[in-house]
Length: 128
Ligand SMILES: Nc1nc2c([nH]c(=O)n2[C@@H]2O[C@H](COP(=O)(O)OP(=O)(O)OP(=O)(O)O)[C@@H](O)[C@H]2O)c(=O)[nH]1
Image 1: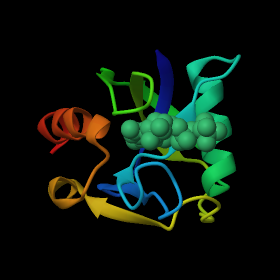
Image 2: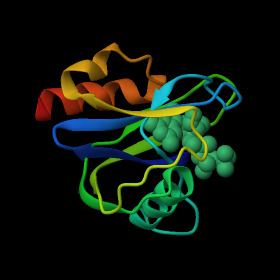
Image 3: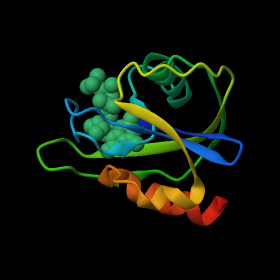
Image 4: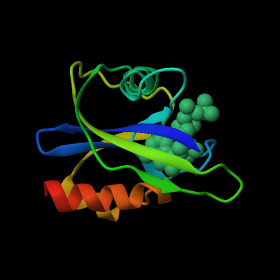
């Protein structure tokens, strides 16, 4: 199983969501920024991926329950979310087509990658 760490980045009651580009796997789907865990801890992976994808430093606050999901034609993933805040605020779009801040009540209306749906539902229930 492939472990993927992702960041639910919060700021002033909103959450940073990122849209995958049309050239990525799961084109145009919304996700939480992050990526596959290499030879490193989950926290090291998340810090590295967020720097690579958005050019910012995060503060990791809390790990939330993970979700296992199989997409057709790829290995099963375990998506492991962390609530985070930002340490630096100059967001750059280095991989995604867009990144936007959404209030929690708007999260449900986005077209999420399938593996994210239980995580989004858990987050809304717990933090709205
Ligand atoms: N980062 C991230 N990946 C997700 C989420 N939901 C989800 O299904 N995924 C999937 O998890 C995998 C993460 O791989 P990635 O492509 O973002 O990470 P990476 O940069 O390490 O991979 P690469 O080097 O193979 O391109 C992808 O298959 C992606 O579609 C999510 O919320 N965040």
